[in-house]
Image (cartoon, rainbow, N blue to C red; front, side, top):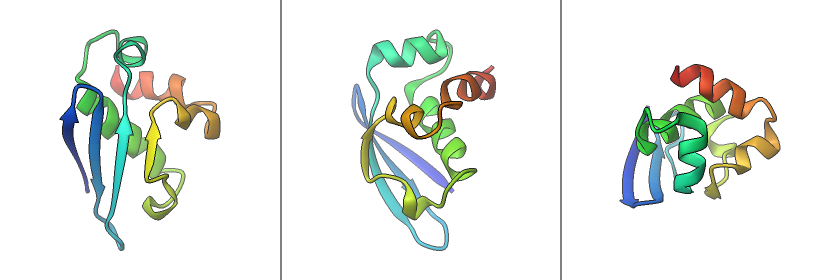
Length: 88
């Protein structure tokens, strides 16, 4: 289960409950949010779907504790294309 809590305009606290519960802090620059979603979905939904993407590829205990959302693309080059499809 993924819970996304807005801390401020660009920072989100994400809790992933699984075998082990983990907490992550994710920054989303407004321009990157616009690039990926065209403003059609909230930043919270973008973060939630991004964690769904990550959890299909690694365990929640392997996900970085603090990161900027574009970092996902460095580890998984298909991220931007896939997240756009997930949000369409």
